[in-house]
Length: 119
Figure 1 (spheres, one colour):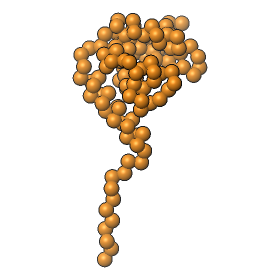
Figure 2 (figure 1 turned 45 degrees about the vertical axis):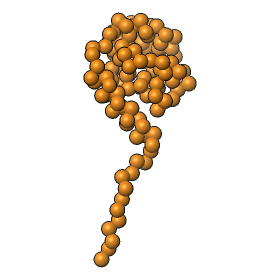
Figure 3 (figure 1 turned 180 degrees about the vertical axis):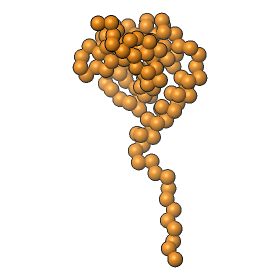
Figure 4 (figure 1 turned 135 degrees about the horizontal axis):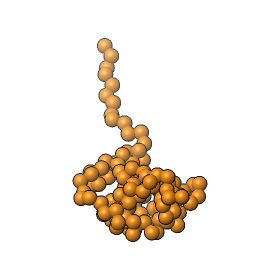
């Protein structure tokens, strides 16, 4: 008779687990908050314009467009930069001081912009 092998649950990539945790926490945090303030997001987005443009369209080919992105996607990415689970030499230090409210407002603002920009 064969002896049954017991297997442990496998988490192949600790980074994948951390990223999943950030997504879940973002959904819980931003899915339960009050309505974000688009106008406050617009004011906060002034520092983003240097790379992401006034209309949320990246100024260089390597800079992503933020205009028209899904609000949850944007907030999840900012939370990941803030927590350090996603790293970028430019975005990580910029996201570090952002509060949950700042992130929600920025995400709402960029999500409200037309994906084609105003060009």
